[in-house]
Image (cartoon, rainbow, N blue to C red; front, top):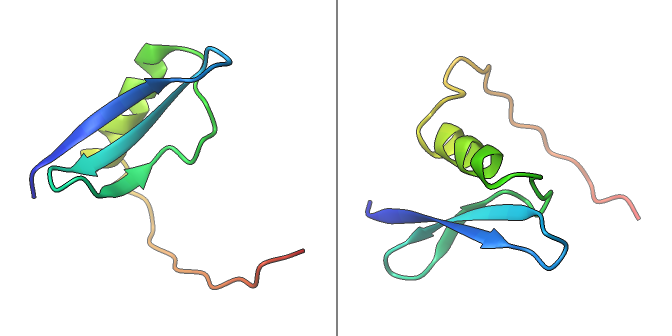
Length: 67
C-alpha cells in the first residue's frame, strides 16, 4: 500500500501527523493531540507506521460513548 506521512503545523504552533494513502484517503492520524516539536511528531509517526509498537499486546476493547 503506497502511503505518505503528512506533518501539519497547527495554528497553536504544535504539530500533528496523518498517514495518507496515495488515493487521498487518510488511514491514520495522531488524533489531534499535538506534539511540541516537529521531530517528536515525525518520530511518533514513524514508530506507529513502521510497527515500532510490535511488542504491544493486542487488546480490542468495545466501549460505549460517554456523554
